[in-house]
Amino acid sequence: MARRSAALNDRKTFTYEQAAALLPQARRITADAVLAVEALPETESAATESEQIITDWAGAIIELGIEVKGLWLIDFDCGSGYYCWQHPEPSLQYFHGYEEGFGGRVKLQ
Image (cartoon, rainbow, N blue to C red):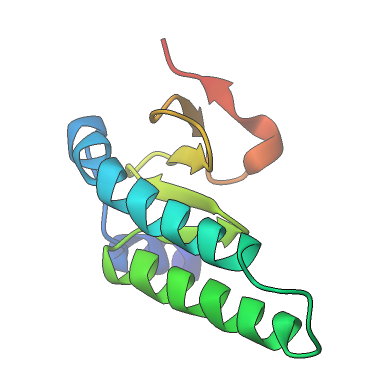
């Protein structure tokens, strides 16, 4: 458990206001990547090109200090869990604890 606590201390944490302010940039990066993947023609190289777009998307999100949790799914660490967003949700509306994961998301009031 001490190892997990140390790892948590190294993470960037966000207030709700900070996460909400950063979300438009994350949404734009994600929407651009989604469109790029959807625009790929069905060729032999499409899978490789798609993987590269997704890798580039994940890198751009991580550079913002946001955690990538799945395809088009990101979490903002708030110190007690995560504000959770998945494309194409319009805003930051969900939270889950560190242990619950996506399945344990609850709507913010």
